[in-house]
Image 1 (cartoon, one colour):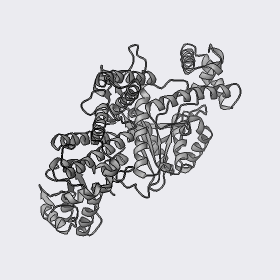
Image 2 (image 1 turned 45 degrees about the vertical axis):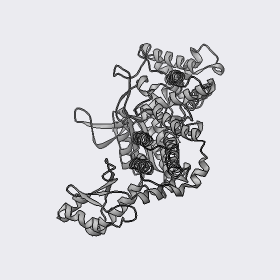
Image 3 (image 1 turned 45 degrees about the horizontal axis):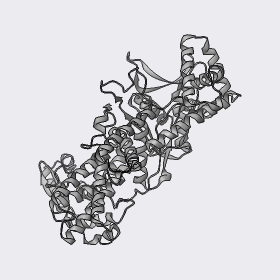
Image 4 (image 1 turned 60 degrees about the horizontal axis):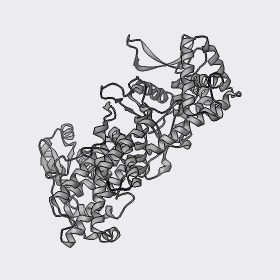
Length: 583
């Protein structure tokens, strides 16, 4: 089934286009007042201005031609020309019956004729532990990829790319330090050992400029695949990635080694980038370096801002590697859309890289390059979230603490559960709390990392949503309900009470929400919807007895409970958050 909002937009747009004599769009929005109108159609006023007509008169003409009798009550004109559309109960009921029988997709059709999307996220560095700075990219990117897979309906059309930092001078410094200052054998080293030599090599570079030549020589050997540099690098890379994969598993993120395509992968493609830019007539020389100037980019003093793609010594830069990645993703992976999930501070960088790729002619047809920038995780002092000593908080330590704190919540709320049950619930609640707190914020906003708020059992939090799911499941356990038989009788569903209807409407917005997240790449749209759904269910449950109702009403209300649980579970699953059966 198409999202309701899409059906309405198509019908309204068809009428408006007929009246305009040309194709015009219609904007349909969800009404904020479910008692008044479920949806509101806009666009009449702009069309009236173009046609030089009175907006309300034009709205009347649109309403007269609208063929919505099967799904809506008579449309109502409001204000200067808005059209309010209220869904009929029998249409709602039939649509919900269809959704009840579809556990996999909840009645939401996959989108046809959508091409391949490549999504770039997480991007940790070799020889460094993942820290809180990697949190947002990793979980936001994971959610977007999950939603796009569901939206498209074909997992092969969503390609995850983990663009790790595994090449260049920093790696030359690490492999030199592994040979000269590391106190353990490379075959026995841990990520902590690697991080230690990484830190030591940076101190050497800072304190003794003479080490610059040493490190550059080590880097050259690595780039030439000489031994032992290349073997040491491979070992360092494996140890680092093994640690990352463990974090991804703990965080319930769908990234593995098959998704890794780091900076090292693109090294042989960098000369081709320079050649292509040269052929396009875009390269300029500035102090011996090769640069690209593009309209609209200025320094603070008003001078043109260059994007350097090759230094005077022949070395390439991050921009060159990112350009090579775009070419590869468009040409080799056949991407129609490439999504980058990074810190908002990289916005200018990606603006310039995207524009360069477009001017070079690499972005063909309807292909899109999207940047999803996000804000900073802050501590209670409203400064970037760090340890008291000023170091970045390690992600592994953060996630472990989340589970410990969640265990305290579980112990307090459900002391009679077995230790195994408590551990499973604590893992789901703790990790879910960290992820949901991040995803429920507007991406571009900074947010304060607050354990008490994210683990709260009330408000728009993961524990509240997980409890809402468990609460519904408890109804089925208490009533000893046969859900298979319940769904077999779905045709008997009836919607009579105001709260039943309100809940049904909210349930049927799921497809609309998925489409919005897939288009706008903003996960907080989904968390907001789930919270609204939980609130609608709470109102329904408080006002409409379920297990104590008469048989036919009881079965109908149990169907609403069942669909609510499925929708919460699916929604949380798309956020990468587990549900729990009891809490």
